Image (cartoon, rainbow, N blue to C red; front, top):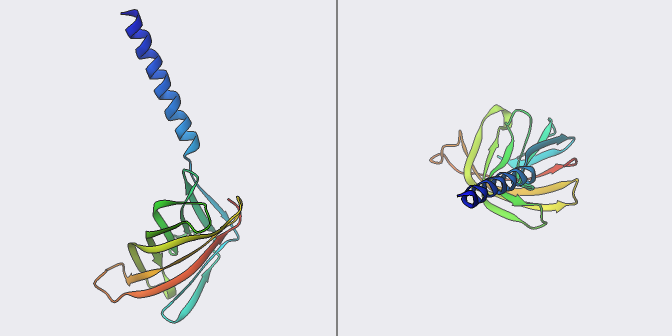
Length: 149
């Protein structure tokens, strides 16, 4: 009986310490700096430098956005901070001239550069007026950069 209690106690301690280590290794954090997001759609190029944030989950790229989330790319499967790492199923929201366009799981995002402090990436895909996929597809391409990870 004492052995069973001892084993149960040790297993509980092990599970607690393992989950604690995983929490420490799996932060979801955002950073902000003088980064920028630039995108081209509707025949125009738009750039935002308004408090650019990059979210990191499990030490991978999660999303990049401005402070009001009116320009946001990512937020599906985290992408490794490895040059050339790509995911084709990311979300995106763009608000050129105050009009919202978005997509769910349709944007291709690629990590183009990473050195531990700076991440640069690119994205391409289609978005739809108000996120309604029955509206005409609007092609969008762009880049993002953050300098203080």
